[in-house]
Length: 252
Image 1 (cartoon, one colour):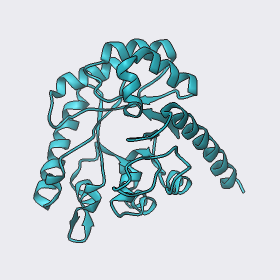
Image 2 (cartoon, helix red, strand yellow):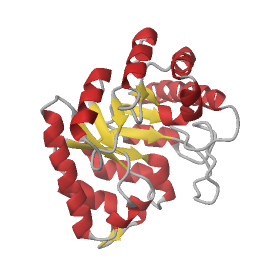
Image 3 (tube, one colour):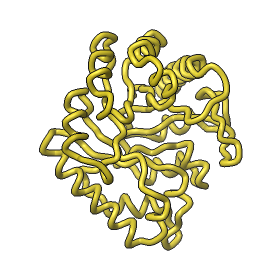
């Protein structure tokens, strides 16, 4: 499993000094990142990625509300193979009809992306799991309506905040899940500050083991009090140790 850093984590540093921030991420040991807002910064990101040997397997962009051709062109420039829509408003998750309409829009985006050799996905927050349609989460209802070409990036932290067991959710969604967001924290909406991966309440190792089809696990801290680069480094150290422990356990 490949590890990447969602660049939203270091958004303040990135805004102040994009080349320097990318250099620091590479120095910490990340070999892959997940950009956001990459249409606006494609040229700068491309130069920084090349200089520091970083790849971008996936990227976040508002496919359902912006110019898709512009997004796909920027993705090609950066070598992004999967473009993930990170947000559909919570109001659109209250009925089966609205969720089906979102799936149809994602299916159409995937058809457009395929012409560029780019895959399309969707990333959840907590409200897609809090939404219940006939006893099932809105995210699972969405998955039922998606073409096989559309993948999911499950934000395992927000799934847990939304009331789901992230391990069981990953197992139920199966091969549809090709990316996960790995983050840690108190698992409440009241305290939004998150912590370095491995130092909060998330069952990180169990989550990693459950993602049998996951290609990339993406580290992200939405909000953090302290030195964000220390947290980013500590997260990667923990994940590398978890991978070693999981591999060792599987050979016994």
